[in-house]
Image (cartoon, rainbow, N blue to C red; front, side, top):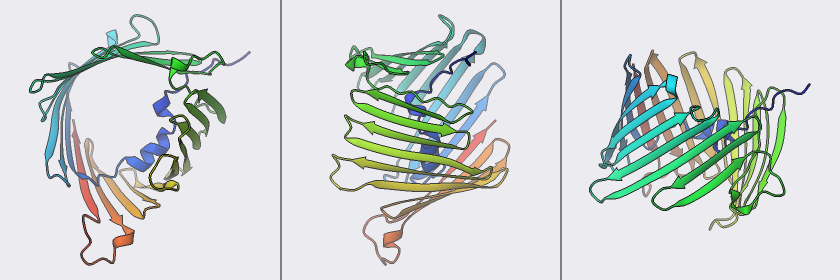
Length: 301
């Protein structure tokens, strides 16, 4: 008797562990403040503000989200400091099991600019499909995230099949413009990508060394890039205790990034980041910003 086939992950989730390790919790571009509160009536309010170190500008947004789990409905409304009104309506598992409908709109009253993207996602054992339609441009794209077949049409966009399971998994996926191979186990994940008609190649790995230490790396080779060679980045994360961890990463350009995150109390978290150009440490007066520093504060209640 065969086991039920799991739902394949979405394309963006492939290599997610490595990407999160190398990109998150490094607040080096400025200062970020996020305040989030929830009400007993399933309404969540969030205020987010960011001060960019380079431009010195402060950008932010105010967001309200209503969730009705009984009917699979999520309604989100946001207003940004650039005077952009954003609305998102999500409906899941109501019309059919595994089907999710999503309508995301944005309106800029100052210029009259507007966008509306309608997305459908359908998940079943062995199948993960996604289709979206730009309402104002009337252009759709279908991406099938399931085991491909020779009859897969060229309009299907990208395809992938990689399933996270308790045993080691190794799958391959192909489309006219993309190749992918992924292997995973509970303690590691390896992903290979061939993108843009095989003009860009990427390889990444993530390894949970032990419960307190994680490591990962990513290499990218772009045949169309002006600079030759492979871009390489490697990083690690170590938990100091149950409330704090440190992260570090360095790339082949000599940029070293350090991050420290501390939970001060339930719902309150602070992160600090530092980026150093190790090739310019001895310069007395370097041209341009050689090093960066930033912080992030999150309050949730």
